[in-house]
Length: 406
Ligand code: F6P
Image (cartoon, rainbow, N blue to C red; front, side, top):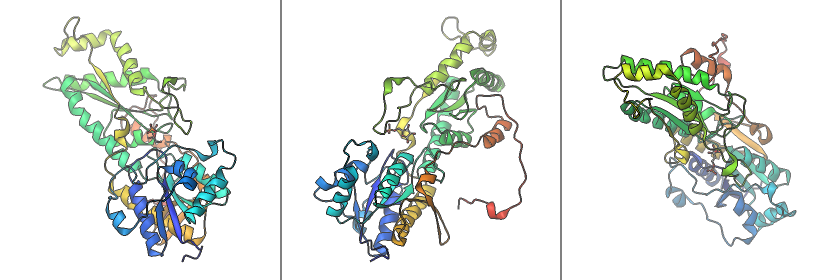
């Protein structure tokens, strides 16, 4: 029995699926076994937590059951829903949850998810339910690192690099739209990793005249200098991009998810249209098409631009090695924190034998892309949809502050 008298835990994963969740489940379960604690899966996120009292039995995690799925498989063996407990009308919802937990003899919860999931966890903890949060979101917009981010960035970089062959073969610019909601972390990191020419993130309202200028110069230079007159131009756009006035470009027809978030869509299409409109009116583009032997009257007067929206492909499939090890460690650490008697906290990281954690309320505050870092890549030639800002480094000699990934 643990010092906090925990004999059985329930594991919940919630929000958007991504890489690393199965690693969290395994890490938590293995640490629980090591401490003589039983483990149950509470399937399909908070939906089943709310309905626990009506559920007959829960899946038992054993070592054999853990062997049946691998840590490097994205998605979650526990299943998800986007149910936000605080939005359930039932005034007795927390009593009902406590009753359900009692029925299944669950003493505490390990909950993995992003800001919405974390905010529910804060509510649960404030209502006397013991729980610890293992950070997860491909959006990477928590204060801590969160599993799923690295896997998604790797996938975005792979898709973007692969699309270059299609782009170059057809002399097309490619606009790749990626998830991330209102933070541009995965577009930014994935775009940098893919050597993208232009990265458009929600943190910077987009000036399309700047984008067009960069596109035109870069694309024309590439085609002109190629002996086979081939070139492409790669744009990664975050779904939450805004126009120059800072207005969302998503139309409202897509509705909202169960958490109440507007479903974002249409950023890549918007970008394509902005560039096409400018190219059509640009006499220099026609000259360029003629000069490079591509112009065919009425048929091929402007270079093509295509949008690609991989949607959920950026967060499914495989999990990166980094996310597996981070996921297993934070899953395990969440159980250690419960055993220690803590609740309502988020695991930040495990460093040596130290488990770093913080109040979940703080951990879920939204974090945006650091624009000083953006200016480094602007100085290196990447367009971010604004007039480039020069990178101005400061020089710091302070080994204690060095943040290692491995
Ligand atoms: O929050 C993660 C996320 O992938 C967002 O980047 C994206 O907007 C959203 O989930 C999509 O959610 P769903 O799978 O519910 O459509």
